Image (cartoon, rainbow, N blue to C red; front, side):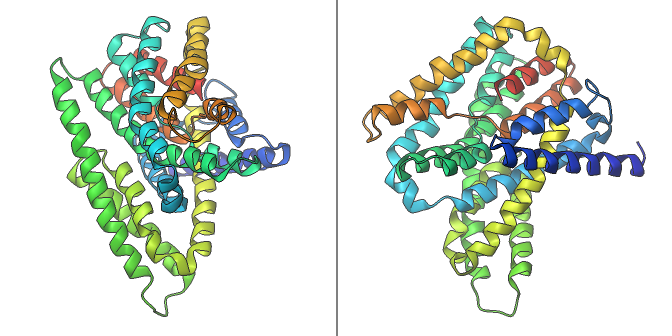
Length: 375
């Protein structure tokens, strides 16, 4: 595909994405509804305006770097003092809760959707991530206690890198010979540890750098932070593949001590950049989706999603908050708010691309379709 065609694809994706964001704002609906619709309409299974597969390795690169920036922006906006107020509930949700969702999602995908066990495990890992970019607009519009808002936002940000790394481990188990399970468990711990170490140190030091008095303007500081975040991601990736996601989340949490003096301009810049990246990513990923694969899921696919919504999520919430302060009504509300967003879509699409290269295209397409049906 020539350069002109590639630029046209990206420009069309951006225009469609921004228009979807505008419609979401006008109709007060999650923009993801319009983003998915427009992406499918523009893709090969719609009006075939463009095909994201023509980007080849470029799509994977765009997804990885965009997700890194999006998760950094989300973690940077979390307030550590608010997390500490609900630390017990959040800690359980991102550990025990992730484990219950992983096992429950895998069992339902295996028993109901008919996925082979190794691909069912991959699906279970993919649906452990939530949607921080979807949760935030929801809680901003609703009158809920700060504690409930903190639980949802913290879970959305902190569970994402854990779920994404877990999905990478399960992907390795899916494509590698038997006996990779122990290596996968060890690799999971290494990725989490490397990401926390690199991101924590990087973010803490960067916080000191940006608050040093200088003549550097705020717009230039914003670009310095963004470049540093991408550097942090790549450094962590060089140490352990797929640890970069955890690194940028850790960096976003530890940089907060240094950005208080100009936090508002930085947040505004990152939010605008996030909206831009989300708009392009969702259009490209949904355009890459196979409608036939989604149709082939049929009733078992719908039952799988309903089981996640009505059984597994409530079980997670009530178990993880059983000794916490949320009331019964608030626990029901927490059970009903568990959207999946760009991280789930991105990792699912990457997994499908890798599985196709390894000769598991039908299985990869089915897993991806089931994840998008959940979204």
